[in-house]
Length: 391
Figure 1 (cartoon, one colour):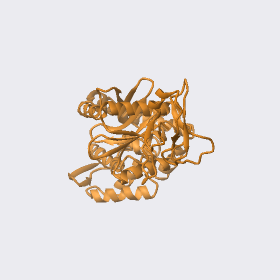
Figure 2: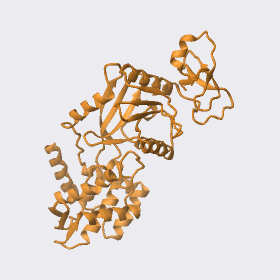
Figure 3: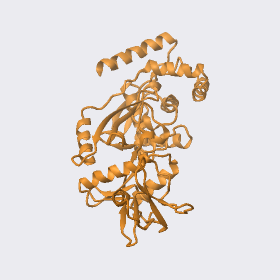
Figure 4: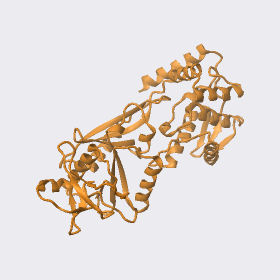
């Protein structure tokens, strides 16, 4: 920990106390009030630590050098901007201790958590809920082990947030270069597991602020949203490879469509179309879209489907585990369900449905089934080529 209290019950910062290396002082844990000592080293940042056999559960030991340095970097950054900020402020009503507590505006306290180690989903949800229910905003900032690469881990998904202008985003702190990286516009590439994103590096100094940079990104992103190419042929080959290698979820999907009179060759093109917010969906993309398409095609041409019916169907699919979402506590259920809304839009574009109002669609025609591989590949190539030329 970086904060302790002295005999006068005043908070002291280990980063300031290192100036008094030749003076012995008494320090105490702000939570359990047990004695602690200032641990000094040539390699690791100076910090306070409990003596052996401490039962303190609030101020855990074993902090990494990255975590200690990161908290210091963020603390110095906010104080240089004259933003009120506390290190390791203990919130007794929550029994929680954010790494930093500050006030980016006069009304709302903000808890910042610099996450450098593994954390269970249950614990992350508990801590986030504790903050939000008590009027705090919370920002999770990821350390080096969890910086975004070309694929998302389940752990990283816990910390994804969404903004109506810049889409899904993650915050990273790079202590070695002294900057924050904002990964934004995060989307899943087609039906693959690969991720596309944009990023903005924010050098941490007294002249920059997180709010300013976020506003710049919002303005910039309105004209530079990344569009995902559908790459339908790649999706088709992905299913075939999964069948050949006996990937369980694809084998289950193949068995299901066989019972319905379909095969991986006859499968309609619409099942391959990627949807917005696919990033949130755990269920095999082709599977839930096939089942939803089935539900629509149970109707006759000319039948009307309402927005309320679609919402009810989505709820039933979720209850029956036909549509499962990843654990992403910072994403609303409404945002997750938008995958269905977008799929309906795609079916409208394909002419299977016709919008007759903002909340009603008429069934127009059945999706095309393919007789052989050549016919299907030819159709997919046409659509892929038109998408590339349009972009």
